[in-house]
Image (tube, rainbow, N blue to C red; front, side, top):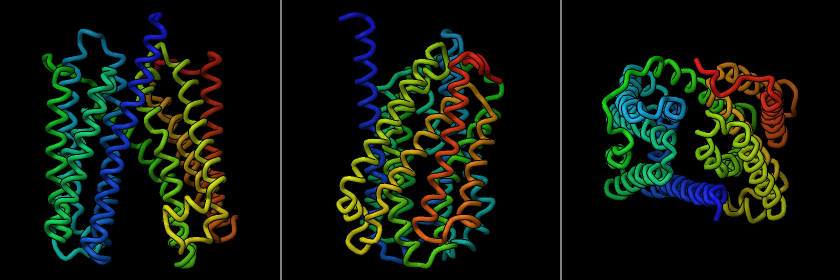
Length: 412
């Protein structure tokens, strides 16, 4: 076996490993919702769902720190990587504390908006941000050092810790407070285990990191914009559509989310390669892979729409069957847009966020001013916005690959 074929085989095995770990984490998160929906009842689960939404929004900082840590570790001198990694892990812990504190500061507003009976569950949600953000730094260290076995282990440990803790808390107490306590504790235990897992990658003396939090803030901003783009249609559904149609759209959005998250492992494995001399080849391969996965998901959904809708929502959502492929296309398009955004974050291209916010604005404008106020009209708005963003990303990437754009050394 040649060295090149050996590297390809190793990369393939690492990709499968990371995909499996991400799948485990997603299933564990889904299990919390499934169990809690039954254990807490409609009222309690409504509160928990809102708290989980807060956790999802706050975890964007962890994603930003992960992206910057991975990029910086690829680009730093090899003899400084251990020390830089150690500093990143510390900064991830500091960042988590900052998010927790910010959550507590705005807690009176959140309690009013969510109509919570007390402070306890929200305080636990704030506490969970510490290990969530710390884990983001751990992902970035393992990703930047291209230690994919450790990366997969941390994904699985944190995901299982959070999932098992949330499930046990829901079953043992039947309360929102108990569920959040289990989730926060489980996440913390998973993050501690993750820190032990990545310890060999961060064994040196701390290296001073100039601009780490500033770069993390910019990456977080870009990822937050993507989060808004991929979720604003669900909010618009509640505002623009009748209650029944909004429910149908919500089930369609689940199909879109599956298609969006399914190829996530491609970007995770390829991200370090986006930041160095391997960038061109890695970009092409990754975009082709994400696009191919998206096409397969859309084709499968179009071929078996009834089965997909039945599995996701049940017989009550039969009106969604003709549109199932459209939601799969939305998710696949957003996945391609996300992959393109990651290629920009890998070289700290801060202009990319403008395009993402522009796509979000386009979606809102189309949905409110142009398209009919229906499930299909709103879904078409989301698809057009996603296609527009992907087209801009492809054009910028093609220009770079021809030698006219910024190179991996273009960092700030």
